[in-house]
Image (cartoon, rainbow, N blue to C red):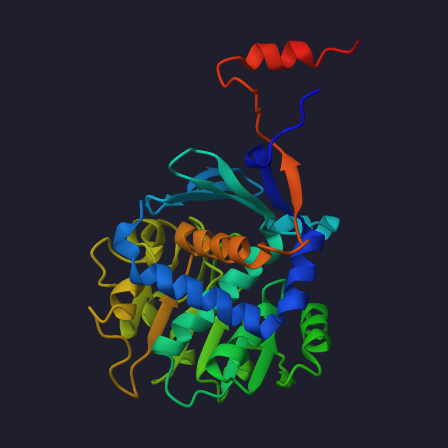
Length: 349
């Protein structure tokens, strides 16, 4: 039987490969590298095809496809969000992604993205905070201590210089888990018994809760002047974390408005509620933080370009390594017009 040619073998990065890659590069350098790739792609935002993610909602969760292209490469991510999975010992979020060559349509990378999404989400949060958080910010409140919390905390330390994290979750076991995982990671950790206690003295407030419902994790009277809010938990229709009054007092920054207005905290606000797109801040076309008293709010729902950036980063990092498996994914007949002949020749003797 004819063996597939190298051009038909697609590099596949498994979960094991991804974990080995993180440890080989180092977590801090990888978070910084991902943030750099994401910021680079935000700088060329206008070159990308952009569309809100394609979502299939059910009573128990959501399954989504997130596609984009810069004209040279095409990428998409498959991702789910099922909050009840945790009770069954399953991940709330799982994902995989693909990068392809636009010129041929051939895939050039297939990768797990459960770990990679956690890394790119944290890198995005910290990259944005570097632009919007008050100068000298040293303490973050981490409200919601699930699967994202350690990544968010360590990215803020590596990229923004945060020295202390104040943890709160409605489930004390989640806070204990997060505190244990962050021990010895160069952060001063405080376990808190309420969201109000967690935000005391914090210049950056990150909310990342899992329940798929409209909730008020932060009330309007809890937020004083001068803070940066990193709201990453409200990421689908009907799911919010902040009181609307916070948005009216804040300057709100978003990734892609047509998606955020449907899925983010903005779904609580009128259709013409003013926002600033992050790519405009990064390219200098719009101001970011303009005063010490300003409340800045990153209404983060995650966007396909961030996944595209992460896949680009992985493609570049695995080159010349053994951290992938060549996958026989594409049919590769000797004569591209003779697909049936290839099948016929593969018949058992």
